[in-house]
Length: 231
Image (cartoon, rainbow, N blue to C red; front, side, top):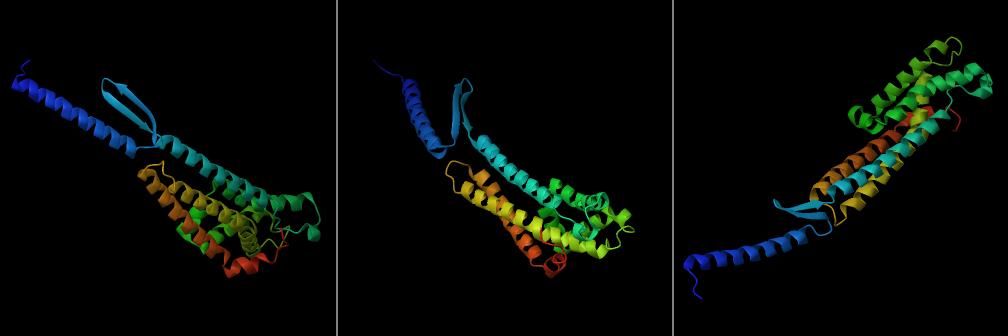
């Protein structure tokens, strides 16, 4: 059987295309090893689905759990604090109400969970000043009844909250995130795109830890907090 030149060219082209397809497919499969969750063949070609979406969703779930647990711990700790000492004033409805009013802005801050962002944007001094102002406003109607509810005491109460409740919980949360991000970055089954995002998140939380450490070392935090009884 004789082949025309054009038949030979077509045959060689098919062979070359087949070899290229096999080589390309092998290279693609090797490069996406452990990341391919599904492959489908249709008239339009081969569709490859990676596991990036599932992995990112799982990462997001873990970070949300850390944030929720942190909010809960800060809220519970805040609710136990008292700006008025019941041993001095007795356990009356007014005293309990003042204590609740004083912690209300701090409880709201726990729900908002913007502590680290505010610390980075404004600095430790501004953060404490803002919280002290919020406390002072919250108890302003009780200052005639309880003269010790001065702006200075509100400032001390803010420092007490930062030292006893905020810093320990934020430090733990950021430490957990840093460890988790490092663990995920070391994985072999995720894309470089996700690793780049995780690296940015890791660096951000390392900066947060530095801000939290700077906050805890402020002399005002240590000195002003001491006027309150231990939690």
